[in-house]
Amino acid sequence: MPELPEVETVVRGLRPRLEGRVLTQVDVRRGDLRIPFPPGFADALRGRRVLRVVRRAKYILATLDNGVVLIAHLGMSGRMLLGDVASAPALGAHDHVRLITDDGSIVTYNDARRFGLMTLTTEKDQDSHPLLAGLGPEPLGNSFHVESLNAALKGKKTPIKAALLDQKVVAGLGNIYVCEALFRSGISPKRLARTVPGARAEKLVPAIRDVLNAAIAAGGSTLRDYVQASGELGYFQHNFLVYGQEGQPCSGCGGTVKRIVQSGRSTFFCPKCQK
DNA sequence: ACGAGAACCTGTTTGC
DNA sequence: TGCAAACAGGTTCTCG
Image 1: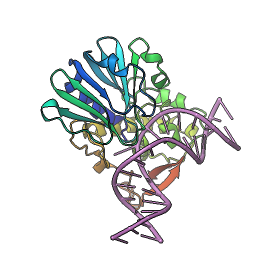
Image 2: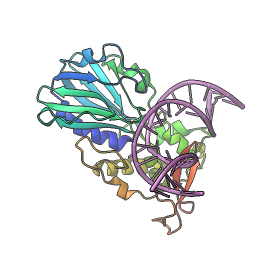
Image 3: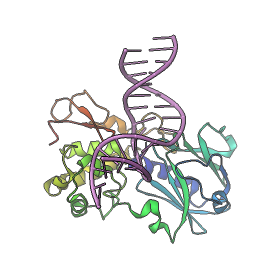
Image 4: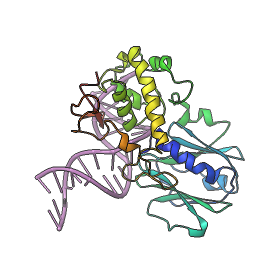
């Protein structure tokens, strides 16, 4: 479900609830997510103060005052639901973890499909953690630029669509924003990645940045069940130019947006505008 | 070593 | 109307 803009939106919703607060209660209802919760998971968090909450790629990282870092990933269907002790919502069918703070906030991690995960590391080991160590550059950060993308795509025979979904190439893109960025840069999703470095990459880098920034400004995209941590809906889905637009007229040329399947995922694009 | 495809799991939408 | 198939924002493993 959530890609970089949605996770960023969730993090911004969690910050005012968690940063500076003490976790007075940590309840794990169901431990069989994508990876099992580590032993002592709840004990490592309970009674600790949250120093900061940040996003890395599609991961949410919460650093505690004992040096422990909570790693959370929302998978396809994960959500962070916010509530208050005063009006505590009943536990839902897929509420897996519930955090309660010293000022009465409730953060509930809900994930129907259980493709998400929660685990622990430490500040010291964070950079070498298996989930985080291999990630490519943040697309909105200083280390993502034409040169780094050129290097990452060099010699790759896979279609550019698949290459951009590879979190080692650039960290945080998913199916929606890859489709949108390729459309905005006029690059066919079927084009081999090794043919993108150069002039095409010079269009692609700003297209990726622009679409992500626009989506963050809109509070992410709300499809089906995704909602912001605040419970509000993102609205960037209304700005999709190709994603989900099969059969609709292309905003660029008036032709028809096509849907194909690449490595098992839907790709939406305009064959006239994207070469 | 690399890339395509399957697998993980549940809920919703689509099509016959 | 009802049921089965298809499909969904991600990641990781297996197989060729």
